[in-house]
Amino acid sequence: MGIGCEILGNNQNGQSTKENNNGDFSWMSPNPVTGYTASMPDNKAPSAVSEEPPEAAEESLVKNGDSGGLKKSVGLVSGTAMIVGTMIGSGIFISPKGVLEGTGSVGFSLIIWTACGVLSTLGALSYAELGTSIPRSGGEHAYLMYAFGSGTRRIGTVLAFIYDWMGIFILRPIMFSVMCLSLGTYTVKPFFPTCVEPPEMPVKLVTVLAMLLLAAINIYSVKMATSLQNITTVTKLIAIMIVTIGGIYKIASGQTQYIGEGFEDTREDPSLIAIAFYNGLWAYDGWNNLNFITEELKQPEKNLPRAIMLGIPLTTVAYVLANVGFMAVMSKEEILISRIVAVRWAGHMLGVMAWVMPVFVVLSCLGSANGTIFATGRLCYASARDGHFPSILSYIQVKRRTPMPSILFTLIISILTIIPSDLSTLIDFYSFCMWLSYGATMVALLYLRYKEPNLHRPYK
Image 1 (cartoon, one colour):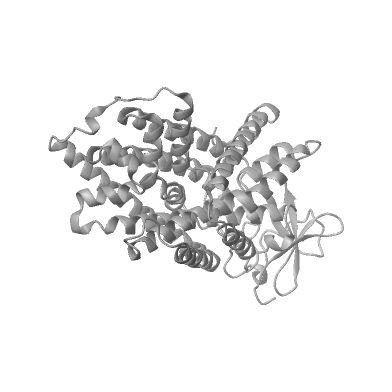
Image 2: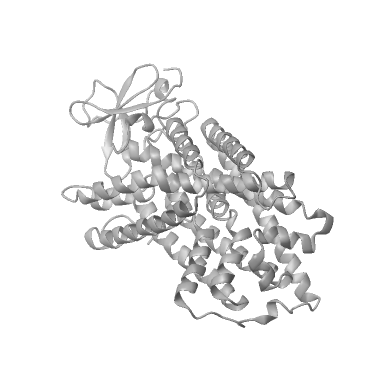
């Protein structure tokens, strides 16, 4: 096979097998938590576990045998960057308008941003317990399968199956497409300064080119993809630092007429407050992305909780400070009529250097989209490995150790989702279904606390 993929399959006795691109097989002893434990030669009984795979098989098997062929190449820094870099996308540069619209006041808006961060942190810490006790890639898929899909608890297989199909065909591709469409819009807009909205065709052309570039990077090298994530995460934090410093400068110079309004005009309508939460949580989405790549995380029992405890509070502080920066410079009325708040802020504060802010927004979208396709490829891979999708999607490029078929499949579905001109309905559907899946996963956490109290939990 020219593409050099691993073939995962089952023999007639139900034992998992692998075939490398030379047609050689090795048995893989199934483990209920990690999926595979160690490789065994074809002529030995399943109980005769070899201490180390032969050198000839090293291209297709990870040495510890626990990751099903995916190499553990993501450390604490890259893991933290995966969380921060995926969460900080275009949302913080646009969502201040949506949150302020729902709250009506500067003070209440900052409270909502903080509350969304606390909620996301609690959710991520719950996922940290699941990810360290069930160290498999795939996020919600792996946890639903383990909690409800073993023995007589077959309902988990159905739940995971429904989640996989919604996630891979609708939810994750929409998330990837929206980020790439934002990138395309901000890239094309300077070339059409007289247009309220840039033409649709060049926007979608740039969007597709960005998708192809990110897919190629993620297929070629995990290290390259994580390096891109690290770099774009730094640029996002620099952009937020610029906004924060600008706001602090305004406040220090005594110009507090905007941020000094405090809780004036605070809304009390619950439906409007719910809209504010909706916009805030959209900006925080992506806090669970590291759980999709647990098998590639070095020392997940330590680095998964650490990355979460570093990444999400950092993002929360960055979001609150960025809002302080925006609201110290711009009035509520100006924020509400601004399509891209950060770009208008740059016009006030950066003068001839205002062009740097759209560049930062483009890089921010690029990093978020990169983190999304990285995680989505692993969800598709894990789902196919458990038989919920065609087995070809569980193949791994042997030399690169990347799930190439699943990344290509994600790319194709994502390109198809940008054909409609309006994604707003799909975005609403995305948020609703994602929070349903989060809720189901929390039920799995509580169920395991009751059903398996002795389950090894490195973090609780």
